[in-house]
Length: 446
Image 1 (cartoon, rainbow, N blue to C red):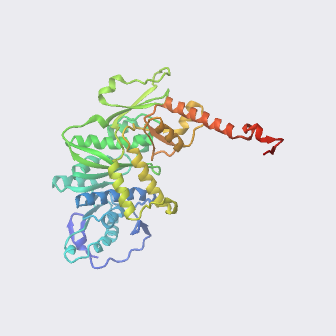
Image 2 (cartoon, one colour):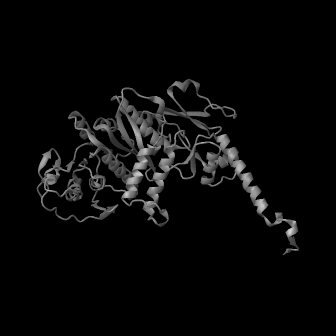
Image 3 (cartoon, rainbow, N blue to C red):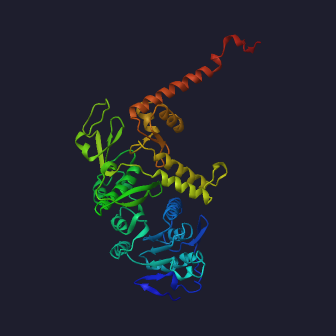
């Protein structure tokens, strides 16, 4: 097999022979796209996160008319192939430092050549493969002022080395897709590692998995600010396998760091209440609960992102694209499992975008434990919170939790009132409390 080399460790779509030789590997499929995995790392459970990335890319192309993508840690290239075939990317640059994956990437990406079959379109290069260090690829893009619409950085652990260069290599208004799998930092077990990698000192809190998302976004906020730029989350997604924290960010030009959405989270161990604190309020940290304060009862985490995790309009646009493509349906009762999961996730993301929702969430079990009450169904509790005028939503991070601006003490009070109402209805509905004039010795009378 002969490829035309376009640079050190690089090959292009224009250099492909007429037919690639068959490679005996396990064939996989995602959303109708077939690809080979070979020796590359591949996790089927991450297909949902890839769905979200493709949907955002498609929305971006609809809005701007352009989509040029750099996937700097491609692996087998499933993301790159899906950007090319499903999001209709004009160009995809697939990079992976592993030399053994070059032929595999070429095999998978060659599917994209049939996308634009016109004679004129065949003159253009639609994809490129390199085997360079991801950090070097991104720095090289910025140095050559070759900016892209979407930079995908699917990294492992707490590797944040590529966050700044990725932001520097994207167009204004473009997208950066970041990944972290550092559950230890998110849980407050490696606080100094979190400080060095993400710029946040993370203490243990009951909503650690949301903290993982916010510290990753906060890292990007800080890196963007050093470049006179800003980032806003399009969506954020936590996956329990790994765990994996992902966020898609839109990059804009801005001259100063706006700290309204970049600050600290304070948690009270005594009452279970959390609050968002901006830099200006650091000297006035306190909890208004009636519990006696002890040393260490208030813990602080930050600085990190304390704003919304998703952009409501963008998620609604993603939902429309998913519906047009048949990835979700209007009637979930007859949908396959993957359709139902994607639709539910997008719906929860829209709910989580409600203005007024603070950072973190409250677990239903914690309400029951602190108030010594039987907790109701999550949906019933959210309805009650909204009836009382509070903002409330499900959390995509934790199924048995609610996001709300209602204080913990008030949540316990509302659950108790719901328990009393339920108990009263049960008593009234029991046979012993039926109309005494309607029965005689257990026999109905007219």
